[in-house]
Length: 346
View 1 (cartoon, rainbow, N blue to C red):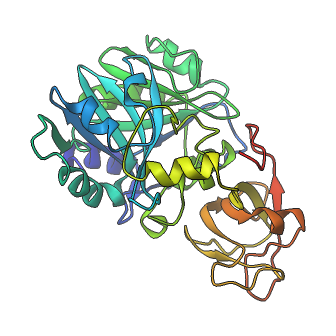
View 2 (cartoon, rainbow, N blue to C red):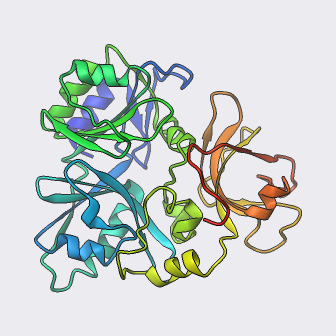
């Protein structure tokens, strides 16, 4: 993390853990949604430049990189040859470069993996997490706060705008949600302008917003645990089935056209104070296999009590109301609505 940004956040009583997730001593519950502000240093950025950057990424990722323009972003996955997700990115473009955002804990190994396939391509890949600072804003007044600062905002989810040398990405959420990216001094000035009108929230609360929006992340414990369709990526426009070959494409396409998806991602609630890690095994009476009934994608504490989670779960277990957090089956999971439609057949 850049020293200047670390010192700035520390001066307002923010503390980071080993994964660069932030906690503020003055954080507020998500039930207060006027204007909530947080640091996004837990996310890292890979910069991709060079004249072959699009051709190179097109052969690596699940989505069509040619659809990423100056005013658009997309979700896209990096798979193993067996179609398992090694990483899930949000990708956007700026100044003739492409940027791949993912949890910081996966950045180093993902960057190393991508570099293995550059070969003779005219492509450069680098970690620019320290030079491109990231913050998040959410709530009913988020648009107003950013507009008061003089920023032009994107109108649609996944759209991108740029003003005052700051990139703004509109993210999915029940209320308006934005990520703002820019150089250290630009983002510090924006934060200082916002902080008198916003309440601070922790990384865990921002991740809860992803859960509520049905947006998955791949973390170190869940690397290579899921194929893209298990994470509903087909419903999130994160897979393009017409773009041609990429690593793992054969497995992904076979599932789409010939297979039957027996497990998919659900949003769920559990009345417990135990917070499971990504890829934690879930249980059911009807599933005795080593794979259990499913695995946690991400879980965070709910302001309404208990925990909310995204989990890849057997469709049969959900249909039978037979899914539990614990082997003793004392903590049942209850499905919650996703904010997008997805049939079992998808």
